[in-house]
Length: 48
Image (cartoon, rainbow, N blue to C red):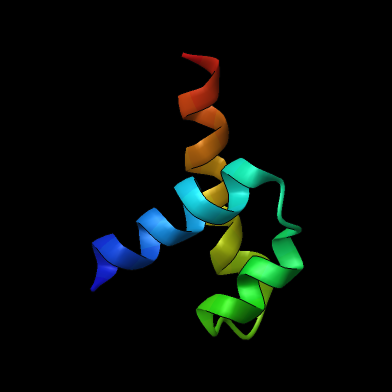
């Protein structure tokens, strides 16, 4: 389950420039703080 959420957040939404607030709502997060964790991982992988 966690892997599916991570994959959805990174490869499908954040990689396609979906706004962080929208990704947060889709994942059911009450705030964007947890979603920022996924965004941080995505940004690190892009710089490598």
